[in-house]
Length: 100
Image 1 (spheres, rainbow, N blue to C red):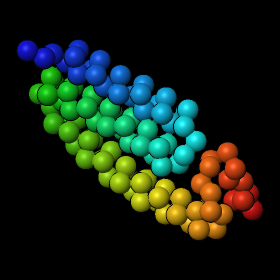
Image 2 (cartoon, rainbow, N blue to C red):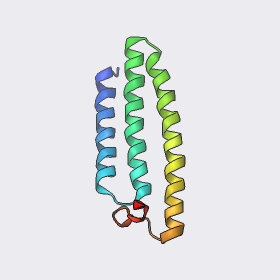
Image 3 (cartoon, one colour):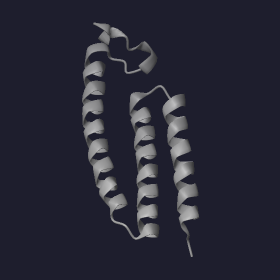
Image 4 (cartoon, rainbow, N blue to C red):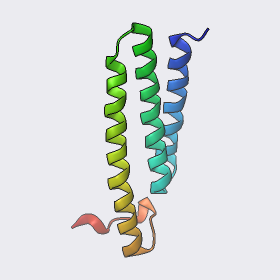
């Protein structure tokens, strides 16, 4: 039988992998994947604690997080496409043209 501890440990591992992916990689698409992995780790923790506490509030927060994640990806990918069209390069370290 899986307990809430198992889900919490899995969630922490997924969050750490997502954070390392975001911090180490310089490709914006891979960075978005890291952010999505972190958000899904938080969603897993919300659902696990909601199930453990017999409370539906955690699952409601999951829908809110999923909505924010979808909006973040839509805006982020639009920015990446716009930058790629303007510069033919999407390396995060080289993007300084948005300074004004």
